[in-house]
Structures are given as C-alpha cells and as structure tokens.
Length: 227
Image (cartoon, rainbow, N blue to C red):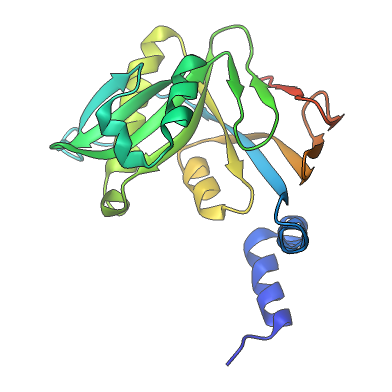
C-alpha cells in the first residue's frame, strides 16, 4: 500500500525541518524536470581538534594509520575515478588512511588553505593563519560503521595535525544528510555557515551566509572566519 504524500511530507519535515525539507522537494522536482539540473544545499561545520583522544588506547587498536600524499593502490577500494584522486593530490590534499590487515577500513582527506569543490563551482578559502584545514570525503567501510573506527580515525587525525598548530577542521555536509551532520556535532563540531547552489545546466546561482553571499555564474570564493 502506497504511503500518502502528506504522511511522507510530515515525516520529511520532522527529520529535516521545514526549510530544508522544502529545498529537498524542490531539488527532487528540478531533477525530475531536467536531469542536468539540481540544488546543492550545504552546511559548514568547524570541528575543534583535541589534544586528548576520544577513545581509550585499547579501543580500535586493530587499525593501522598512514598518510598518503600521492595516489596509491589502496585507494582503489574507495571507488573514486583515477582522475579525481589525481586532482585531489594536485591541489595539495593529503589522505589519512586507516587499514585493517591489507584492507582499506577508512580514510579522511584534508587540505590546507583553499579547497576546490568538485560538486559545484566554488572554492572554500580558509583563514591564512594556518590554524585550519579542510576535510572531505570521510570514509568508513560498511563493515566498520558500528565499531570504533569513526572515533579512532579522528583521534589519529588530531594526533597528526594538532602538533603542527592546526586547531580546527572545517567541512561541508549535505544539509539533507542528517546522520552525517549529527555525527560531526556529536564530535563537538560547531555550525559556521551554509550555502545553497541552484544549478540549471551550466548556469549556477549561489546564496550563502558567507561572503560574497550571492553569486551568479563564475566560480565564487567563500571565505571562512573561525573565531
């Protein structure tokens, strides 16, 4: 038996809130009318790095961590196109890899300074103080998602970067993905803005809480201020 539309709408509003639910429905409608068009709605969060680990030493000790600065065979398990991986390293990104035996268990990508978004046309510019990095494409293998790896890899991330003077890791989260947002907030992340992109074929319009606030076309630069 089909679920009535109004029942599904109430559920959506309860999960996402009124504004985000309306944007989600507009995105679905737009994709249905023109497959090359969509709405991307992002929330930005800044997660403070910690000097002390979240987990005791015996939790998740079966994982090994390594830092990659160029394409390596282990990354094939991510399923990302080779040109995407090469472009990430070309812009200065690094990848903290968690492995279990010979298998990729998880990873966190990060880059200092500026991150060139690959879903829409925008660049994220971090403060020039060097106290922030941009993290993206955080991955945990399905078999490890109910275990300790998510917290363990953030402990490894903090241990790597805190001694280098990094104090915050900034990222964007799909506003429709409440589980991811809740995971970041559960680790102490705080809200630091939002941006909405309406893409109609090659035309892109941006509205954001961050400067320059509004942009039509081009490749705007969103500038973050972490205080």
